[in-house]
Each structure stands twice: as structure tokens, then as C-alpha cells.
Length: 69
Image: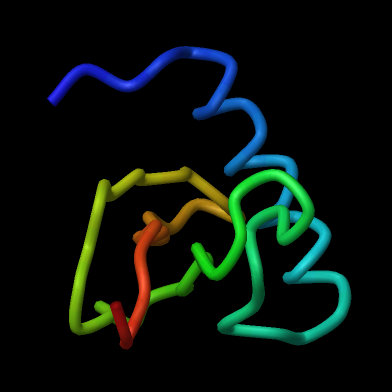
């Protein structure tokens, strides 16, 4: 699946925000994307896309999805 590069940038930016807040699961952008969440190194029940970020010399998986529909 091809993801718009702007979405990828938004996911990565949200990842760093969540990392600074010590969160591993949180809403992506609730006002724009509703219940869609970002999960860090934890695959949700329903996954729309997966991203890999190189952070502190380790690969981190970021999942965009939800545990509910």
C-alpha cells in the first residue's frame, strides 16, 4: 500500500511527541482522523499501515490502526 509522504511525516512527528511523553499508544490526530491511533512496537488488532523509524541506533515499528472498528 502506498502511503502519502505527508502522512508518513505526520506519523513520525507524532511518534517523537509520544516518545517524549513516554506513551506507547495514543491518538494520531483525533480531530482529523477520529479514533485512528499510533502504536509503538505493539501491533493493534486492525492495522492500516506500519512504519519503521531508526531511533537511537535501533529500529522502532510504528503501527497506524485501532483495536476496535
